[in-house]
Length: 103
Length: 157
Image (cartoon, rainbow over all chains, first blue to last red):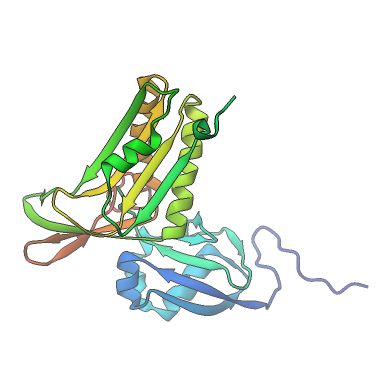
């Protein structure tokens, strides 16, 4: 009988204890608040975008002040902070994206 | 049937170098096109009665290039007659009256490229991960937030 507890239902994070190392990039105001432009961290491979944000704030509490006006980019795709489940791979690039002002 | 130089091109550059309007405009000219439409963004010396002395830009460069490429694809879907698109954005310090962004688009007739240029700058302001700091006479500064940006504090609804 298979001992498989890996499937995720809509409201649950999978029973998965795997972690991986990902790159974090900080820009503009978020780089000022964190004090760094880039770093590598170990985080769970599966987590919601909100949980990912919480992992980041744990390491740089001053980032909490921009929580309402920040999104993330995971593998160069924008992700808002919320319930969206992310499946990360080792070496993935994640960026903290304050409100943009190009042009 | 396209000649080699007529194949539609998306020419994207995000750079710390000074921008050249001539270079960007020349790069989109084409024998099949009667129109080149242009947008040039320059640094303004004032904001809400404060004297601005310079802008400083930074970017998530690889993603900015990818997002500009997506805008080019959107443009080609909306206006299939567009020939070439060139978007150059400057990073680092941009002094008053200097150029921070140039968009040039060519099309056989003028309406498509004029509309596409407007769409391009509007969408760039909403989606491309570039940030600018407005630096005042006092050396204080503000990180600007485009009203087009959906997660800004002054989002335009």
